[in-house]
Image (cartoon, rainbow, N blue to C red; front, side, top):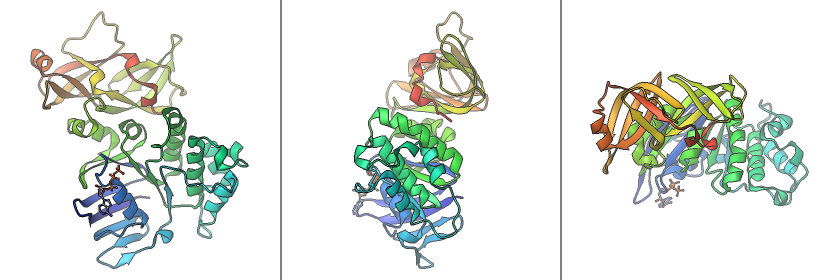
Length: 362
Ligand SMILES: Nc1ncnc2c1ncn2[C@@H]1O[C@H](COP(=O)(O)OP(=O)(O)OP(=O)(O)O)[C@@H](O)[C@H]1O
């Protein structure tokens, strides 16, 4: 399943004009406030009619201005999860989930009540009323309700924005499971860099109504041009990794394409696949193989790009194995090391600089 969007819509001061593909997995629409994210997701949902363009899922055209097609929202077979859960307060969790089931087309296939409640960890909440649930639990029920309507696609508009960081951390693994187990395309609006790095398979960056960057998450995050969109402190690459082993001193060893990483203990079984976000500001570069360092992680690679910003810093992209890593260092250091594309160097990372929530759970 996939979704293709190619629309333009005038909002007065801003014209939203975007084209992108959302394959199965999570496609994050990422951008600053006012960049047009909600306009795009509302157009896909059928809550807004674009001035022109086409929106199609693999099996069906939802909107085509030239052909005069504009399916009403209730016929688009989409599950919509909003920032606030919008559960019916007078119904139990089960009642809310059953409400979702009413919208499943007759004869449609998909996960049933038991499967959905197990996937979202809400089986023990079925007889509770929404008023007695935490924010994270409410959102999981809202996702369950959307899934039980057997949608062809899920739309999520800042689903974690109203939650505190503990509730966010609680719900992220469920979203990862949803991404990895259902095969549904999920269009996910967020302006949180950490959330997008952790969850997205595809990233579409919007800037003033236009697509500034789009592609697989690892590729988009390792592009030095992204620093402008992510901010200096949030910029960094996302590396696919496999858990190798857990050591008795509390460190977990991961295999990445360019070598190994030792990080504070990660709650995953050996051979589990995961992803690790490494902030550019946490990476130190050395031309010679470093010795006598406290930092445990050293990846060797080749400089592929150096991009200067407005200030004293530069962002260096290094190819380590088949992954691209970003390092933010000063222009002065880059000059002293005579860094240039093609030069071999070593990227150094402290184990403890990788935060637990920057490591995926699946
Ligand atoms: N119906 C409308 N008429 C005029 N302007 C609108 C309308 N709807 C949205 N806008 C404006 O268009 C811009 C894009 O809005 P949109 O809600 O799509 O952005 P967003 O990226 O989702 O922002 P946020 O992250 O703050 O929700 C904003 O400046 C908004 O004020």
